[in-house]
Length: 114
Length: 111
Image (cartoon, rainbow over all chains, first blue to last red; front, side, top):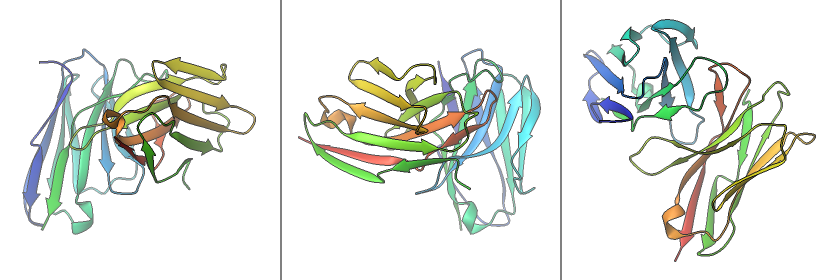
């Protein structure tokens, strides 16, 4: 399997639930990212991991908790989300941190908060 | 403040036409300008990218024009096909991991 794989593809959860999104990249990249994509808005960068270390947190609420156990896997743990958190969550990776490396995206997890 | 402004929001052209999507930026420190294509149900995929030391870059039917003094860049799709119907995003970055994306343009190519 190649590229960036995200699971699940769709997730419906209540506001009090706890769930996790998973991302796996098979490209040998060293940087991984979480983005939020909402209709009619620019992609919003949430978190950046370089060599498993978090280097960016763009003022993301604490109800979103990332985890990067190794360079190939990235998780986004969710708890007590709000209806406005319903969106497409995209994972991406790039070869190296910095240097304007092109980012490779997964197909996303469509999240719906009831 | 939106770092990259993209227009139009949507675009409909006939097959064979040349849709043009425009983006503008303010930060002169930006030095990498990629375009992404996104089909429904899929993640964005890198289409073509340009650096500010060139004014034009072509890859197949896709061309980026870059105007450094005006701080604008645009995507042209030559001989557009129905299979080009997708959402297109421009982006800009300044040497780090932080990419700033436009709001996207939904392109429909009518057969």
